[in-house]
Each structure stands twice: as C-alpha cells, then as structure tokens.
Amino acid sequence: MEKKRIVQFTLILVVLSVFVSVPMAFAISDAYKGNIYQTGPLKRTDSKLKVKVGDPAPDFTLPAIFGEKISLGQFRGKKNVVLSFVPAAWTPVCSDQWPGYNIAKDLFNQYEAILFGITVDNLPTLFAWTNQMGQLWFPVLSDFWPHGAVAKKYGVLRSDGVSERALFVIDKKGVIRYIDVHDINKRPPLENLMSALESLNK
Amino acid sequence: MKKKLMSFAVITILFFTLVFQALAANKPPEKGEQLPVMNLPIPKNPEERNYLGLSGSGSFKISQIKAKVVIIEIFSMYCPYCQKDAPGVNELYHLIENNPEIKNKIKLIGIGAGNSSYEVEVFKKTYNVPFPLFPDKDFTIHKACGEVRTPYFMVVKINEDGTHQIVHNQLGNYPGAEPFLELVLKASGLK
Image 1 (cartoon, rainbow over the protein chains, first blue to last red):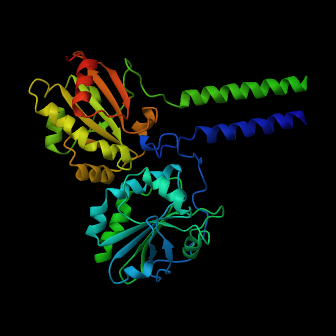
Image 2: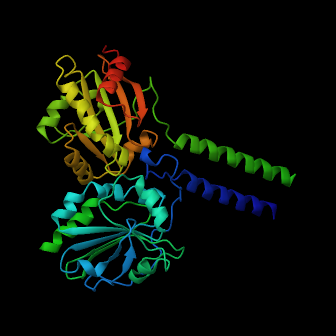
C-alpha cells in the first residue's frame, strides 16, 4: 500500500515538473512587465466549428472600445474582413498578437481588408489591456454579453468560456474564405493570414 | 519505517525536480561571460554581408563579425516597446556609420524572438531598419539567452584572438542613440 502511494506521488511530481518547466516565451515584451497572467499550456483547441469555408459569415453587432457598435454586415460590398478572436486579455500569446497586426496596417490595406480584434472580455478590461499595446488602428470588439455569443455562433467558444485563438477571413460578399482555429498556445504566423488575404483577389 | 522511506523519497524527488529546473532554465548570460552558442545564417543580401564583414553562405557566429564590438538587440515584431524604440535604434546605427572613427569597429544586429522571416521583414520595412535582422522563429536563441523580455540589448566585445565577452546587458530603458553609444564606447573600452 505504502509503495503504491510512493509510486503515485512520484508520478504526480514528475508530471508537475514537466508542466512547470515548459517555457512560455510569449508576451515577452517589456511593455507588459509583470502584468501577464501565466496560463500555462492549455488544450490546443476545445470547441467545434459551426461554420466552414464557403459559408456566409454569421452577422453580428458588438460594442467596440471606442464607443460605437460595429456590425459585420456594414462592410459587405466594401471591405474584406478579418476577425481575430483571441482567448483573453492579459494572457501570454494574445498580448503578443495584435501589436504585430498594429504595424501591418499597410498589408491589410493592400488587400482591402479591415481587421476586428474580438475577445469575450468586457470593455473596461479590453480598454486597459489594449492601452499597453500603443494606439491600435483597428477596432477591438467585446463579445462579453451575452457571454461569448459571437464566438459561440462561429463555434470557437471553449468549454471554459474563453474563445479559441481563431482567424476568419470574410470576403466582400460576406463569404468565409479562410479559417484558422490555431493552437491556443501559439501565435499564428502573419504570413499565413496574409497569403489567405492575397488569394482573395485571385 | 515506511513513513520515513516515503518522506525520503519525496524529498529526494523534490530536490531533483528543483535542480533539474534550475539547470533547464537558462539564465541570461551576464557581463564578463560569453554569449550562448548562436548560429545565424550569413545574410543573402550582399550589403548586409559586407556590413558584417562576412562572405559565402551557411552560418556564422557573432565572434566572426568583423568588428571590435557587436550590439545585439533581441526584439520582436509583436513587442510594443521594440516598435517604439525602433527609430532610436536606427539612429544609433546612423550615428555609428557617420563617424569614421568607429564606423568599422561597432556593428549592430537584431534577433527577432519567435518571429518568422516574414515577420522580421515586416518589422524591417515598417521602421526602415538599416542593419541586419535575423529571425528566431522557434525561440532557440531566445531560450539560450535566458528567455529575456524584449527589447534586450547585449554589447559584446570581440577580442583580437577571436574570443569575446559581454560587456553590457540591458533590458528596455533605451535612453536614445547618443547616450547609448556613449555607454557602449565606455563599456567596451573603445573610449
């Protein structure tokens, strides 16, 4: 019996040590100092998509941090739209994704695309968090209430109430042309998104 | 007896777990120490190759750069402070290049922690970065350097005999081109 307990204990410690020693190399910018909550490695994806490439993108209206409400439909016929869902404010990889998009405005313009950053956090949290990123050129939308409703509509709401790290490219006709539900622990390389945008015009 | 044995086992395992972690977590190399092994690709762009005094293809080590001092900035395209400091770091490059006394003695490179080649290029183009930038897509160099936050500056002195040592390390707090150059000159003994 005792022996069994020792074996169990050893196993637990070994497993724990593996988790503790996994390096989290994201959100390493000094801009965030000690304000990033370390989530540790998470299950890569944890939801089931409800849309697929070729489907019309489900419409939605969400509040943006600068006051106005934004509907997907208002861009139909005018702009390609990129939806960037990130899991949560103040977490490692997310804090390291939008600041990159923030210096890629020219690339989005080149492909006649507008970008929306979306999380399930409430507006004040999003406001404080994105302030650390410098002035963002793209609207940041809050899918807080009803909680994660838009994420749920697209099938990217995880079982713990945060969204996946997911990218959707929607063309001017309102059709979904690209979906990347990325491993939540990793940042999607910018080149993948840009080549998806580039292929819209082909 | 069994209880004692169990406590002993637990303490031993805990001890080894801690030691293992201490060894696994690389510390940033300190002043006076050498850099961790960094193999960077020799730039394809001939101007950048010339700037670093390298030839051919394949990879190179920092100590092979033809200079007395190399300033390494570990940055990320995704890092707001690196973005904010970029114009000031460019200015440092121009200050050095426009001064015939130090032009061939101090070289500047950037390493993009977790950045792909494409992402490094976006950063280079956005800020018109005139010195060579290298991608470190899988964080290999970043890990070897103790997973420092960014931007992180390392000033490396290259000795006549090909050896090198770090003479200054700095996390963020970039003071602007002139004060930083002054600091580099003093720390490296060039002044």
